[in-house]
Length: 304
Image (cartoon, rainbow, N blue to C red):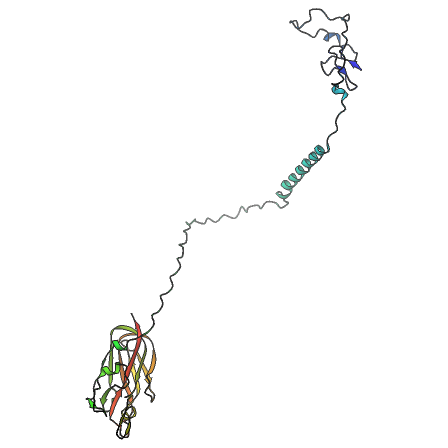
């Protein structure tokens, strides 16, 4: 093994023309004459001129524990490094393809028609739509109530009092049509056809139903037997109900002592009049009387 004549560094088989430690030329070729005295005229110049008669300093022994760098064989590139480089190259190629291939495209950009002029649309401020509040549910309609006891009845004629089979006095005022007792009644002498009875409310209401018992719904017993005052007196066969706004409702009545009603389409009024449009003749037998009678009247409606 050769050694550098200047520094004694071991020269491996990979050494070139110069020592890799101090730069001394070691290939045996002397440098050109113009480069012999390469130092400056400063203190760097050697005190003694360099000649070929300089003593050769033997190289120091090589340290077996410290191999020279030239003696160490070159390490091959690791597989991981090669794989990383290949991955980087592939990623670069893929990124270039995505950028230029996807964003590019073959379709040319649309060319604006220079002849067409853009239409200027005046900008209008956009007003926010008011938020819709949920509508409150409609108030529940009040149920009809019986207004009969609040009504005041007026009749054109009234029959005078009489005495029943037990000797008790019986009266026939108009208010007895509103007491809810069928055995009491209003009655007038003779044929009441065309007569009008008025029922006044204390305040206006929506009338929903009207009704009446169209005769004297009472029976009695005397020494000779039963007395049927319903068929003995005259009975109402048809009436016409009239309201403040002029609305009229006709009601036909049957031969019964029960309350007969008719529905009204929520007519708002303060008074109700009842015209006796048709009346029966008086009955026959021991209970026959020439009177026109009504036992009860019913008025239903919604107040307010």
